[in-house]
Amino acid sequence: MAQKLKIMALGGLDEIGKNLYVYEYGRDIVVVDCGMGFPDEDMYGIDVVIPDITYLTQNRDRIRGIVLTHGHEDHIGATPYVMSRLDCPIYATRLTAALVRLKLEEHGLADKVELVTRSAGDRFRLGDNFECEFIHVNHSIADSVAVALKTPIGTVIHTGDFKIDLTPIEGGVFDFHRFAQLGSEGVLALLSDSTNVERPGYSDSERHVGESMERLFRGCDKRIIVTTFASNVHRIQQIINCAAHYRRKVAVTGRSMENVLKLAMEEGYLSVPKDVLVDVNRIGSLPPERVVIITTGSQGENMSALYRMAFSEHRQVKIGAGDRVIISASAIPGNERTVTKVIDELFSKGAEVIYDRSIDIHVSGHACQEEQKTMLALTKPKFFIPVHGEHRMLCRHGDLALEMGVAPANVVIPGIGEVIELTAKHIRKNGTVPSGRVLVDGTNDEGVENVVLRDRQHLAQDGMLVVVMTMSSQDGAMIAEPEIITRGFVYVKDNAQLIEEMRRVVYESVESCERQRITDWAEIKGRVKSQLSGYLYKVTRRSPMILPVIVEV
View (cartoon, rainbow, N blue to C red):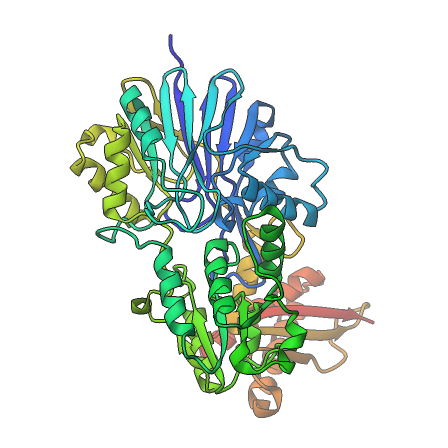
């Protein structure tokens, strides 16, 4: 009896980010991508969100490899956290492998992880049941590939992030021929990028950005500051080309931008004319009209270089009326408010800010509807599973597959942790595996518990109240006035009457315990907390975190 191919997403569905997909056949497991997500505004103190990999750790001896489609954070960002728990090789193209190596070095894992470089067109076995092939696609980062997995019951194509760019900056056009070949041979299932499914037509070529940059540089007598994604080396190359053409020096600021620039130059993905790059500390000695600064911060991140420039916290760069700031990126869903905050602050400094999408200073790296239709037409899959998108995007992509002739019973909209089983003839959902998100706080890659996050949210919304009670160890009587300390709740000096009322409630709670002969400190603290919480909500409609403390003398 033929075994079933199982496909599970541990991230990348109903969201933009933390892409991680699991393919399982017999005793073999192959993982495609290993991404992180960015924290929401209410995730106080959280730095990174990664997938819950409980299922992988439970089956670590069956994992034959992790295959990476490209080097964006939402596809490789969780790698060091995951590899601290797993022992398997990682397969990636050259630029992707170099970016992953940087991450592993930062976490002290570079010598412990086998990192195997493969190129588009390469085929390699993963266990007894999978043959993997990399297929060249266009995207907003070099060396992007789709993955074809040949299994005993058929071939599955996982597109990764892709677009069809007929005039790419580097790397050649999308490999129509190979996708069509696989389609002719027979594709069991297609898992395809859904990000831009709501946009009709085609995505614009990256070359259009270079043309827009040239217009913005021409005749400009201001200092030019450009922010874009650090990983978009094609965009950076075009900015450097414009700067060199107009005899401007280029300075780079922002840790990730500096790292990627250095790596891309070493690996041959960036060509920088001699004497164009200068240290950011030198720009003060140069005329503004001879300077271009390339920086991080296109998403309004509050530690990024552009954010620090906007809020006058950057050591070397002060923004003013003599600056033209070009935001060559679109806001990732969820980041709109932070981006707007930075743009407003730049305007308040007198800078000229160019961020309008109509100016073609950014193009998407994701396929629009006609490109997604092209992928479906080339591969002609029996089964279709939309991935990489919010729920409405997945549903719309499913509708697109129906328009392209995929049978309704053969289109499955997946959910995080759901197991999709495929045979040569049938597809169905069958059960779930452990899934969810792990919240990473600083160096704590064990994850922050939900109760801790709830406490942080509670503190941020309503503040904290500490009640210090000095009590006799002999009879439990209160022998000093309770001290009330507040943080983020009320200002003590302006709320003397409320503070006195809180002391009264504390006294009454302790006296109530004395009358009932309650001597257990924990029970007394619980009574004080309960009574004080009820009183404060009644008079203020707020519920601060209350921490009773008993000092025993």
